[in-house]
Image 1 (cartoon, helix red, strand yellow):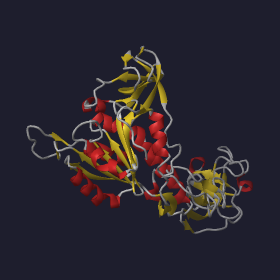
Image 2 (cartoon, one colour):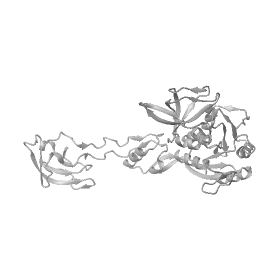
Image 3 (cartoon, helix red, strand yellow):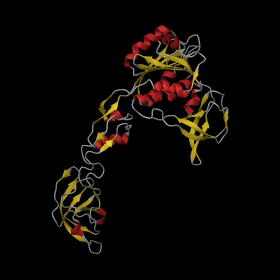
Image 4 (cartoon, one colour):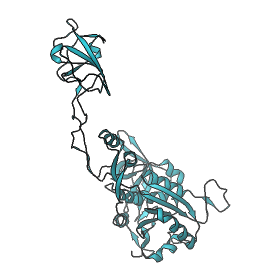
Length: 411
């Protein structure tokens, strides 16, 4: 990959295109249906059976032959001998003798000869004999075999993201496993000698390492398996040592910090000599300094160190890459739109991503800016549920303007 000069700025689209043109879908394999949740199916799933498997009752009541109860009413009830009882999974009667009824539970198979079900509410609920006060229509309260799925039907197409309802369908047709791509393993490192692990005492010049926790949580929310290494000091040799120790377990590496123009930008200093990395600026705020490349066959995202910049960069660049790796398309989730509830300003020449709270106002989506624009304001970030996109050419947007928004906390 070519190196950027410090002055070079690329657009958000250019940087994202670089990333999505590099990352590849992970291999697919059969895995248990519960483990496939949130992943894209890589096969057309064909049902090996009908759903329902057999004609069955949709009510608790009595299976009957319609001809035997024709004309039944409260004034002229029809009485039939009860010839047996049929429970779901407890079939004691497979054929209904003419002139009789059989007690039947919801979901139980219809006996041969029966062509309707009389609900309990239309009867006296008799045990040896039953008095029927309303006649059903032919096939009333009967679920047909195969009315939902026919044997040989494609029930899930390749590319479908498996959700809870798909898991239920797979189980219903007897599939214990399904073919999907693997869940990406994401190794997360923070850099900075000033960083202290949460729960440890702080020195006068130290801060807690929030980034590795934030990014690990974001990776988990995106469906990946996150491995949080924690903080690494600003020493290139130590950074490379930790990186090579953990990259063996990674499909993706995400670092934060050390990619700007300072004297201690350890990530750039350590990785730039490899010749497979791009470091430069993106026309966005916050999150201008970015790095991306490959170490062997593992993509590595080098994100800025301010927590808001780091998280925003994850949402804009890492999350789409994880979608691509798991086969979820489109890799870039569609943007939503909403109306601003108050005016916002923005510096020219940069795409600004402001924190906001997306809500419903008078029946349409509305977004209210949350807090300031500073890339260190984590409390404001926690209060937000979306990002307001302010175009590069705009220096201000009036209240009521319809804007693009990036919803947060999405799959």
